[in-house]
Amino acid sequence: MAPTVRTVISPGRYVQGKGAIHQLGEFVKQLGSTPLLVADDLVWGFVGHDVETSLKDADLPLHREKFNGIPSAKEVDRLVEVIKKTKADIAIAVGGGSTIDAVKAAGFLAGIRWANCPTVASTDAPCSALSVIYTETGEFEEYRFFPRNPDLVLVDSQIVANAPVALLIAGVGDALATWLEARATSRSNSKTMAGGLPTVTGTALAKLSWEVLWENALPAIDAVKDHQVTPAVEKVIEANTLLSGLGFESGGLAAAHAIHNGLTAVPQTHGLAHGQKVNIGSVTQLVLEGAPTSDIRDFIEFTTRVGLPNTLTEVGLRADDRESLKKVADAATVAGETIHSMPFEVSSEDVASALATIERYAGNVREQAHLPAPVPYVAHH
Ligand SMILES: [Zn+2]
Image (cartoon, rainbow, N blue to C red):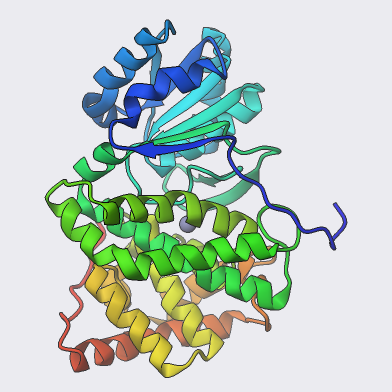
């Protein structure tokens, strides 16, 4: 593709609402006749019955394969074999971002269609035409890009509201980064994950995601603590899943996600959600940009109220552990990382310095705003 081309990509159909799961069979039937459902045992325990009923009502057969937890190259290859064995013509991920990433990659390799039924709104993985592949131990390995997006993304808002609120909070962290990164990509006129330059459409969707979240995230989080679906919850699910999905893919990623990828290189951060690590990336990107102090303060205050980490302490790191920070910064700035879409050059030293400063910066902002002090994170293996 010529570097001057601008492009937007999106899933074939997006469906969201309370009880949407009951229409899964009806929508899948338009796409294939032999679905393979992939879900881990925990998720299947919650939604398996409803999925089964919906497929049965649409006269579709039911094959469920257990997902093994990490979207590694090995797990993807295993799912490809299952697809071939069952002669499935559509693979459907039921679960979170990891299940979804594995199923997209497997569906593509097997040459069949794929659909996603996210049971949480914790990442913007469901709508995109790419997967993030991790090593067996959970370190970032590579992005895999596919020639098309999922044919269907179906989200049942009640299922999302029934999940632990921490997952919705992580999704807000992932989605807030979308605008910061799309804004940087638009300023530098760099290529997006969709394989072309950003369109005004992609950039505008990223901004809309940000606005919806500032307005609705706090009331939505309160509602989900009681497992209720309110209009604010519906808006946040859409922002985390659809707006952020289209916004990051067609608007562009920059420093925040590269720093997230860097954070996966040190064991101290393992066990944290994607969106939690991304939020550290967002704060660090704002510092790298030399963003207005009031913007950085507002972001730290807001994300603290949301329940996202914005200090090193909260992701198991320390400002004086220069060795770990260097490791994170080196991984965040390798050739090909999205940090090179920033409108200025960013070196590993720049990232290490910015990371080291967020501890005191965020700590002071929180103290002055009478917000809770950071609670140390200890990774469990
Ligand atoms: Zn993300």
